[in-house]
Length: 508
Image (cartoon, rainbow, N blue to C red; front, side, top):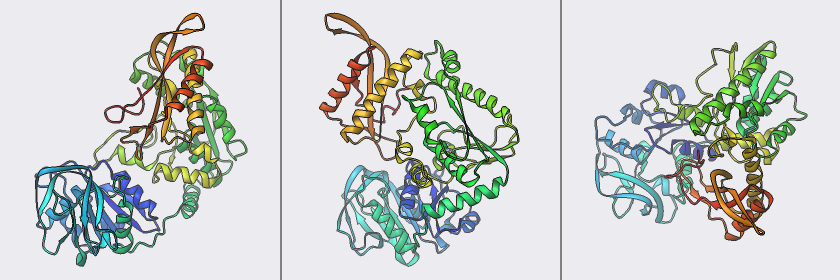
């Protein structure tokens, strides 16, 4: 990487991706590595700063993750967050103990406005706390620069050695000035140049693709989602005439979305191949009700259709994928804990004769992918579409899947999305679910027995947790009225007000 880099060492914290994103939002490039990354590897990365993440462990236990103590003698500024702060203090001779009173949620703090992270700020601040341990005794050379009612060392610093720590989480929205705290570390401690920007990134990615591919032909499974669509746009610009995109329409997409995807790439310098495979997928799914079985069947059929189309193409030597950085982080490696495995992380499929794998977005987060897509010329509405699961509506139809049910859900979902967007209501993801429940109703003088549609709208910054969006009763009434009037098979509409946890965003 030509630009400056901040290294984030992960100790099992759930917010590691969010930390990396916040750093990049400050125009500084960031990467995430396991907490036990060897010192020699860190030296090769040559970061301008290092951030130690939070984690679920108690640092004083022998089994808890540690880092090489030599890290703190490299002369590189270090910022600890939550567990990372306790690790910093413990490694340098401080004492960490279990709290008599644990702190969770937004907590009032008193900060020292002369401290580097709080320079010039108000003395009263709010920080999101989530800890059961606290620093009791500081290492030599450190001082406390923030406190709460139950945590005397809510932030610490050793200005002479450029070592800093915060017990709270500055990366989350619940810490109002969190990004500003991070910015002060990046620019005042690490002296960042702010040299990370998407225009330079686009130029570099195009250059790398051309160097890797040369005159070779590239095949991309274009799902129609944001990631694969941006890969298609980037490769079309980097290697015009050398890209073949196979779009498998399994019939389980949102209303008119297959046509939308095809229209989005009309006029681009690529070979767009649309495979209408609705009958094949619905046939394979006939009578299947278990959601995990549905997912596996859809995935298996997709691979079969893609392989069939790939064999028709001659002289294709590279496979392109829409792998993004969270996929890589979550799938882990030899040192990192695996949160969940991703189908597009792990190398080339052995059964297909490709010589290389092209993954130009492998180092980007979703918001960066969207911004890059707009910069490349994709329509803003296209790249800002709602997140959509790989199995499509197959996991938003509870019970068995039929063509009739798919059409019902497509119509209901389109009405909900249209009305919500028209209203200006704030939600990060919103869709309809066709439940497997029917209920009695009355239309005119006749008894009906229609399906129940559930509406789901959530607000979230990271999709790891979410709260339901408090939509107005007027909006819900409008949506309900339209759905039962315009979708004859639906007799009842309900709204899901469950957060994550305990629920998930999707129903299946």
